[in-house]
Length: 93
Image (cartoon, rainbow, N blue to C red; front, top):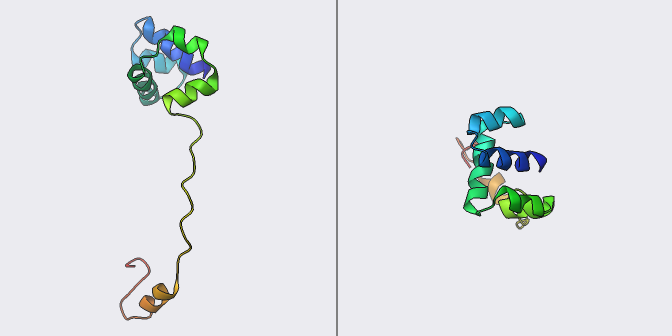
């Protein structure tokens, strides 16, 4: 999160995204993504300095992602039955 704070500081100083990317040693697209997220939430450098790392992650949507819920188990009997037909491959199914 230190890099994010540095990005916002440099952005508020008027640096362009390429300069910020070089300074923070990251891709320009990453800088662009973070700046877009922060701008959408109207976050300034001062506000980011007051927040904890976990709060910043939640605000910018970059926190740990929740895994999707497990679906029901698959019944493979119909799959095997279809595979027995001539010309049917697993890729087709």
